[in-house]
Length: 65
View 1 (cartoon, rainbow, N blue to C red):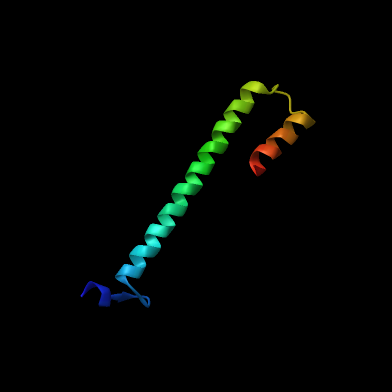
View 2 (tube, rainbow, N blue to C red):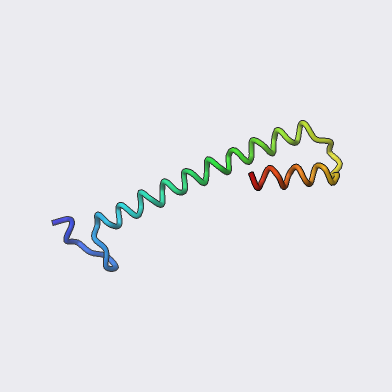
Protein backbone atom coordinates (compact mmCIF):
# COMPACT_ATOMS: atom_id res chain seq x y z
CA UNK A 1 0.00 0.00 0.00
CA UNK A 2 1.37 3.40 -1.00
CA UNK A 3 0.33 5.08 2.27
CA UNK A 4 2.38 2.59 4.25
CA UNK A 5 5.64 3.41 2.47
CA UNK A 6 7.81 5.65 4.61
CA UNK A 7 10.86 7.75 3.98
CA UNK A 8 12.51 9.62 6.83
CA UNK A 9 9.48 9.02 9.03
CA UNK A 10 6.82 10.36 6.67
CA UNK A 11 4.48 8.56 4.31
CA UNK A 12 4.47 9.08 0.57
CA UNK A 13 1.25 11.10 0.88
CA UNK A 14 2.78 13.37 3.54
CA UNK A 15 5.89 13.88 1.41
CA UNK A 16 3.72 14.70 -1.61
CA UNK A 17 1.64 17.18 0.43
CA UNK A 18 4.81 18.92 1.66
CA UNK A 19 6.09 19.11 -1.91
CA UNK A 20 2.85 20.75 -3.09
CA UNK A 21 2.97 23.35 -0.28
CA UNK A 22 6.61 24.19 -1.04
CA UNK A 23 5.82 24.49 -4.75
CA UNK A 24 2.97 26.93 -4.01
CA UNK A 25 5.29 29.03 -1.83
CA UNK A 26 7.83 29.17 -4.65
CA UNK A 27 5.16 30.26 -7.12
CA UNK A 28 4.01 33.06 -4.80
CA UNK A 29 7.59 34.21 -4.20
CA UNK A 30 8.24 34.21 -7.94
CA UNK A 31 5.14 36.32 -8.58
CA UNK A 32 6.24 38.86 -5.96
CA UNK A 33 9.71 38.97 -7.48
CA UNK A 34 8.28 39.59 -10.96
CA UNK A 35 6.17 42.47 -9.61
CA UNK A 36 9.26 44.02 -8.03
CA UNK A 37 11.14 43.73 -11.31
CA UNK A 38 8.27 45.45 -13.14
CA UNK A 39 8.30 48.29 -10.61
CA UNK A 40 12.05 48.62 -10.98
CA UNK A 41 11.77 48.86 -14.76
CA UNK A 42 9.06 51.53 -14.49
CA UNK A 43 11.19 53.52 -12.05
CA UNK A 44 14.16 53.41 -14.43
CA UNK A 45 12.15 55.30 -17.04
CA UNK A 46 10.58 57.77 -14.62
CA UNK A 47 13.60 58.64 -12.50
CA UNK A 48 16.72 60.55 -13.51
CA UNK A 49 19.83 58.44 -13.93
CA UNK A 50 21.77 60.22 -11.19
CA UNK A 51 21.24 58.53 -7.80
CA UNK A 52 19.61 61.22 -5.70
CA UNK A 53 18.28 60.94 -2.18
CA UNK A 54 14.72 61.06 -3.48
CA UNK A 55 15.41 58.20 -5.90
CA UNK A 56 17.02 56.10 -3.16
CA UNK A 57 14.05 56.76 -0.88
CA UNK A 58 11.55 55.79 -3.60
CA UNK A 59 13.48 52.57 -4.31
CA UNK A 60 13.38 51.64 -0.61
CA UNK A 61 9.64 52.34 -0.49
CA UNK A 62 9.07 50.10 -3.53
CA UNK A 63 10.96 47.20 -1.99
CA UNK A 64 9.16 47.38 1.34
CA UNK A 65 5.64 47.67 -0.12
